Image (tube, rainbow, N blue to C red):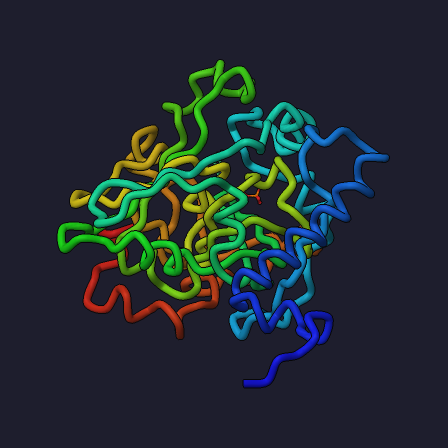
Length: 312
Ligand code: MTE
């Protein structure tokens, strides 16, 4: 057996790689946090803090990215108001620490995760995805996160789990928009289990390499790039695996306009407008909307044999 001087041993040799990676990420985050305190208080979000150890992903798109400013000032987050600039103006009241996410329901290992443990659950990846809002605008966004499947595998879904329900924070003190009844709070969304397990489905904690700004759904949100943006629930506190198809907030509000699937589909119009084209934020001319938002090669097989006009 070879005994070396302790100084000659790299931390990576004595620490399991995952823990080592987490520690580095945490320490780099702390450095940024310390630097950031000169600019703002610790409480007013962690935005602006660089996420360390982010790797690039083969699932990333090579398309011009929407500027950070547009992604963070033109938002839908009704908990902070219904205007596009309301979330950026009002989401400063959201406290993203402490924060927990409970995973429960039809799982063998239910668990309530502290957000910082969740952040270190799997390697973080940058994924440049198209985002198509049901209202007809789109962006190209470099998200940072890891596949939701990583998390679901760890809780071991039972044989009864067929759907996954996502529940956003319900706290009118922090979320002034919840004092109005525009939606039935909390915001709820859902996916079929196979959609949730699909490698494109991302648990998202960052944007442009930094911690997610509050208005984009801090500290953790869902991103499902082949579905209209409203499926991508923000500021999630609970994930429930269930037997029956969940009723999402938008379906509850208007079932004729917002179905459970809500796959981006240029051939199925919204009852009040066409979905054939979209306006990419920053561009003048409209462009054609692509089937499954351009992700047909990856996801079309999930819907083989289904009438997508019926299951809109
Ligand atoms: N999640 C919650 N909790 N509340 C919301 O109002 N809006 C949805 C979705 N997630 C929403 C939400 C809609 S309509 C869209 S288009 C996207 O978030 C917008 O995400 P972005 O503001 O980061 O672009």
